[in-house]
Length: 201
Picture 1 (cartoon, rainbow, N blue to C red):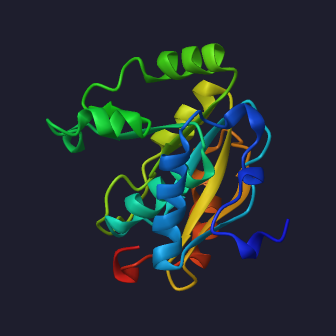
Picture 2: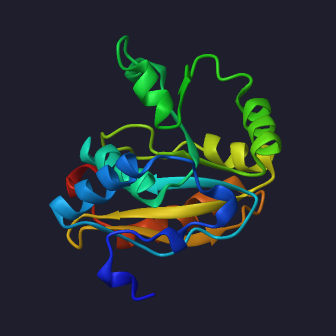
Picture 3: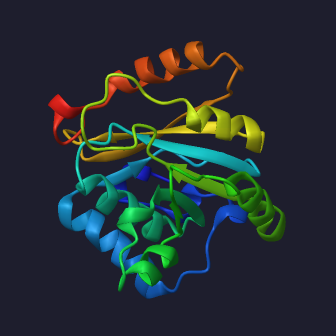
């Protein structure tokens, strides 16, 4: 497979993490990526459970290209988003895309729900933006590291490369239990990527 010839390719996703989306939704995802000249580089690792984090998060376009990639790849993913973006009238669409609304003031039950999904579906990919906001943050929160620990899974680091118009499926990181050291490693890793608005990254 000469990956650079495609915006996305089915072989980039292991069989147990492929969804059952129709041809139209997959075509839509590929079309959006092709229209803007974007592609997905790399391969989702063949692991039963994985937490996918994406950064730098500096623009609403991050969501557009990420969801286009999800549809084009036919990736079966659940992603966590602030409950405030699940607005009346589009809740069904957000959930169809794999969204799970999270109220940060009361995040109980997430781990149990994801573990149960993994059991029922034979595996699960869970996505989130560790920065939690498009605004510049001085310090990332460590909630995603605790979540990976609770789920007993590795963290897949996905990067937005706006200058290169790429979504890069990168390093598969095994948390060490030292949240500060892990956070330092992950933030250093993401310095190679430039978002749409670099001053906010």
